[in-house]
Length: 376
Image (cartoon, rainbow, N blue to C red; front, side, top):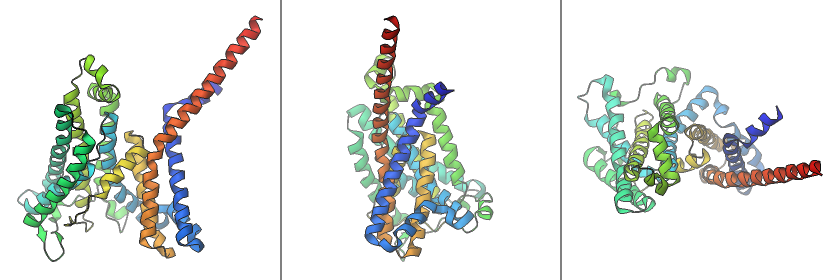
């Protein structure tokens, strides 16, 4: 029994979980300090509101958590998948925006499609456009050895400005400086969720996100293709020596990452929540939130799912903090602090591994000393 407990605490799953929990605690503590600095008398109440998150408003709050979590789960999957294959897809924002435009364009212009498949075609358009945008850094990396971080950052800005231009030229509402509304047939079906989570914009998007989590998990852990992708990420030189096509895998990895981010954009803008593409010189924040979600989940698809839900949870809690007279800027700072402390999970993972190695060496030395004593 004791040996089983020891094996559980030494397992990779326990290390990943504990490092993520430590990162969350650090983020919450930093957020509490911000609350004390901005409004000391209400700091405890505000902090408890963050902890309660979506549970404050019952089923409506839970529905809001699932709604906010859906797009960042997708961008988290996008970044995490690339991480697993040795690439840093910092261009998820550009892929997200491009996919969102493709979905919205189809939702507005392609009204000739049957209503039953209109939303589905819009999602497919987002996947294809996201994959196309993601392929560019992948091709540059594979064939020209251009660092994917640099090219992906450039694609964020290129994607943002091209989408602004296309919105103005094809789907623009000049009175509101944003895209016009999509057709009703392009809005994602509610599947009865609006009756369970009354007052929310929740739809089948959360089911699609969970399905993508399962699909990516299976690809990475249960297929030869996933094994080759991870092998290239761990050691590209050894993989090449083993006969794995490194260039093809780099391109395919970025294509799949881009497709996931593009789908995330479609799930947000086809939710029927009153969200529109605005003509602003601002990169989509969902892409950068996806980086933190991937780090917090340590690039594991299941971990990304739960970290995305956690970020959605504290986001709803942050909005509820306004009941205690906290200004919106303070709320944004706290949420950002908790989100970006997710990067510390990798540091904590390394620290836990070092502690385990030290304990293992001490135990081994003690065992050797005991054996020598018995021999004497």
